[in-house]
Image (cartoon, rainbow, N blue to C red):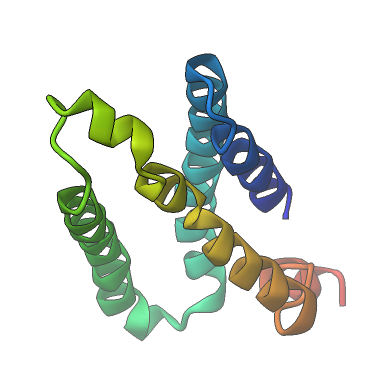
Length: 127
C-alpha cells in the first residue's frame, strides 16, 4: 500500500506542467514501480502453489514486455519531437503521464476489498 501511495504522489507531481516537477514525479513513480517489481516475486512465492510458479513467473516477466509495447503504442500518437509547438499545445503527454493513476486505483481497491494485509506465510507461522 505504501508503494501505491508513493506512486500516486509521484504521478500527481508529474502532472504539474513544470520540467523539474515532471523529473521529481518520475523519480517517485520509478521508486514506486521498483518497489512493486521487488515485492511481487516474493508475494508470488508465498501465495502460488509450487507447481504453478514457473508458468506464472513467465507471465509476470511477459507483462513487462507487454507494458513496453503499450508505452510504445501510446508514444506513437504523440507529435514528433521536432514539432515543439504541437508538443506544447497537446495534452496527450499529461494523459499518458496520468494513466498510472487508474492502475493504482485498481490496486488500492483490490488491496482494501479482496486481499488480506498479512502474507500467507505470516498467517501460517502465527496461527
